[in-house]
Length: 478
Image (cartoon, rainbow, N blue to C red; front, side, top):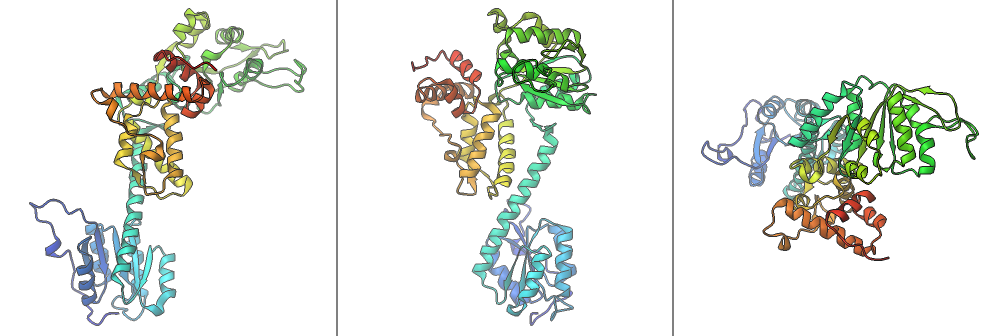
């Protein structure tokens, strides 16, 4: 299309913009300018080289070669390339070659004013945007900036997905030594049918670990049946666990299988096992001893071939001393104990999890958020996370929804950075100070109501009771 075509000469990175061996690496993104008009290429290089490393090509073969050699982030592409300067066939072929070599590259097509139809066709074929000639350099800079931003987000997301794929184990993310020990234990216990007791604070991912054990075991083709023993009233829990016959009690209009029976050939996961009442503890113990159950109102013994995995955030040793938990049931369940580390003790896993969650929620809510500000990362690191992963997930979900910019800020997370009263403390001590203060302040806000406090902090009621005992907090009279 230009007046001074150069079809055979290779246009590489200019010597003036090439870093020497002794110079620091050039941090400017690479921009490939594909244009047969040498004067226009020179104008674009002059106007853009302050922000970009400019690589130049005058024809399709040179452009394809330079893309493979330099891997630019951005490309401007004139559709009228030799030997078809008056048409678009060569330009469309160049677009196809560039996107085939690097589907992530962002191509801005440059056309004449009368060629809008061809420009829109280029968009349908994968171009990022188009501009009309004569080029307005200020508009081009804005379009390049937007394309660069999108390219960075896409590359970061792809990198994150690749890291997640290598750093996850059955949907559990973690590279810390503590989590590597958890993964090692899962692999060891999965091969057998022995009961496993997963212990740890609320929100640490105990059910995910139970599912991972199931998926690693020979029972993976069978059902995984989970029940939260602390979320169902005692009057209903027995029926939920063991089922009932028709007419066994008022409202029992049909026969119903319980969760234990549903786990036939698979795995039964009993979460918050410490919340079981003494009568149900006896009935569960009998099942563990005999692998036989009876439905409520029934007389038939039913054999159940199911593995039992239990979890608790309570200190069952203390519960046994208090008479709240049977010693014989504890030893039946606790053949292998698998402790789950709290989030505050997992080091860099915190940021790994936070970034993975940020990506997931940004996609879900259609938000263009690239990451966390430095202050937000600092707030994440110093916060005590009493609700562990569940609380982190809730806060990041909210932050993505509330964020107005391209990065998450501390106020989006509702985590304030306050260094003053924590100076002189170790990281663990600082977290304890923040944790105590947060629980105490929230309890006072709700006048000692544990349920409301737990809901606001994103944790369970037993966790709040544990923290009250841990820090010997006094609850206001209601």
